[in-house]
Image (cartoon, rainbow, N blue to C red):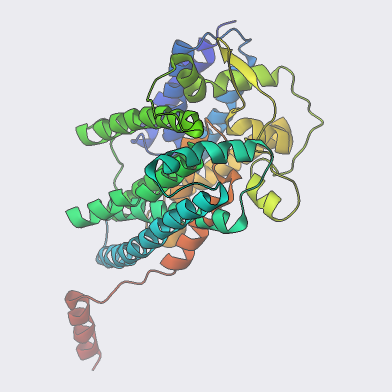
Length: 432
């Protein structure tokens, strides 16, 4: 009973059973369980877990609460295929998203250019490629010295995120290769802003929004239960994992180039494992000294919004405490569940997880091209993908992305097609 593998095996069993019930690995009752089953297994294989299993059991219980509540919400889900009106709404959705993607891609790339030249001026750098490489490290030192980015640059840095969300939606309803090319290009601003800021968070937020939008739009378009184990999906996930590994190495190299040294892509195995797979171990270590009298009431789950409203100052890196995970490496990333527990207590965190799961399952069970479904399911996938790190909505950028998307999409009405017009004329004749 003292092994951290037991809760992981329990999660695997629950997830497999719910997969048989839902019929898809992408159903909310299954998706987050599959994600955490793989993540916890890799974390324990790559790190030396020398903590009591209580913290891992708590993580698993909160994930299972989400799964069971989602399964309850998925009850009586329909499997009716798309109707003519749905096909027309898909066409309308594709047109809106394509236009929005072009517009926001232009705005986001312009914002990245402005961010670059403004950074040159702030740090008194020449307009050279060498200076561009140094910007990420300089901004990292600037923030960790307790400084806050100037407002014009903070505003410039938020535009890549609605771009990524629109790009993911476009991939889900893409009509041809041009749409897919535009969709793929929508991730470029998020990658650029991550390199310019010297952090991984920007691209990870953009990627989570892109994937969430893609899977939600695909569900809305086809109403089918998406399969995971096919060549297209598996190869895409493998390529994504490989690119994220490269991004981690690249960001560390950019930070090391702050003094003008050459850019060297060298992998520190312990450091990479710590940042990618250390959060569950950090959470398990933290929970042993948890103080139940600390309540943030949303100040950690929605840290950016609370900071913007002046309710609670946001701490750089979310937490000031660190936990040793492997060798001499430390991390201050504790999964999104620490924030939920510190905000709402243990029972409150379980209640929030249950509500989140139920609403996600209820949304998934009623596929349509309406904005509430697409954005609601997109948010579920994004939050689930980000849950091993921290709350997806702890920064203002993803909140801004979803608000913008809700405004742009608006009510999607079927656009009249020749077949629809012919039917209307026929009906008028029958009435006459």
